Image (spheres, rainbow, N blue to C red):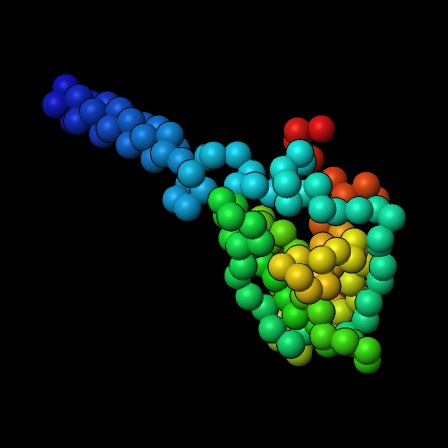
Length: 153
């Protein structure tokens, strides 16, 4: 009887230790190195200008991973074709966008509200909000503060 009790206790202790080690490991790919260049105060974030906010409507032609500036982690970018132009739209860091329930895909009809800027010599929009059907993906507030950095407010 004592042997069964001892084995049971040892099994419980080993499960607890294994679980604690598993939870102590950082998530793969995240690196726990901050925002990866996507937070407030970074050169990229400083390009968002509330004075240049515009809204476009169009169809998503592509969804891509990009690195907008040297040293940043990759982000998710869509190309939207409107009646007037085809424009790049920067959504946010891959580690944030890929974890959301609302997925933006090629062929989707979207309304994008964001700051119109120039990136790499071409017009682009840093998105604050993307509407797809009844879903609204809020990415930044009116001042351009990213929702993924909200805990740092």
